[in-house]
Image: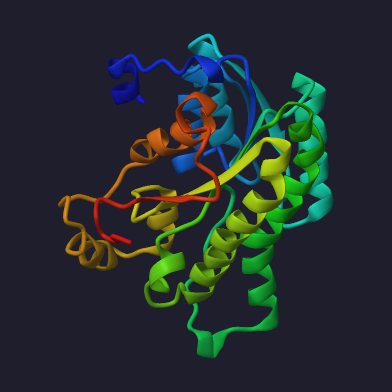
Length: 262
């Protein structure tokens, strides 16, 4: 955020837009909430378990003069996704943009140890959440056109590290859902794209990755460093702005320091 502020970046067509960001209490989502608020967007800040972190992000946004509404929901349940969007509309009157960022690995588990319950938990959190939230937002996005940005992962392309295969598969699902949604929704002037982060130093990796695993990943990054949440912000801002990316549809922007070059 400090780098963005120092650059004095100004994207006028985001000012005043009502942007719902899921999974926005920590990591990439928190950086997005603060970054979009800096552009004058009104932020629907979704969270589930991380109450204190969400409140801290909201306080920072409001302290800087921004507008934010905290919305708590368990997005593994479709009914909760609908309620989340309803709360967003109640607060701001519409949804101009949706960033589907909520998700997680749940646990590192080998395919040989997978259970039906584990499969359901991972897929509901990473896949069902995107489908349900987008479906609920579509009627509002159709009114004036808008954007949907999904967060996928480098694991969607490389299969993930040991024990994260199912997570990677759920993100591969999201990558293809992005293309399918883009085809269906562009006639309504709704642009759908995705961002695919590489290894980003967030609470996600604090929870699921050992220092040894992070060191191994670092050796694969030509830029010579692991990413920070703020490194992802520019890609989302670009895709959200029709002034910058009106002809960009159904694309996935890789943000990984060169670890994966399509």
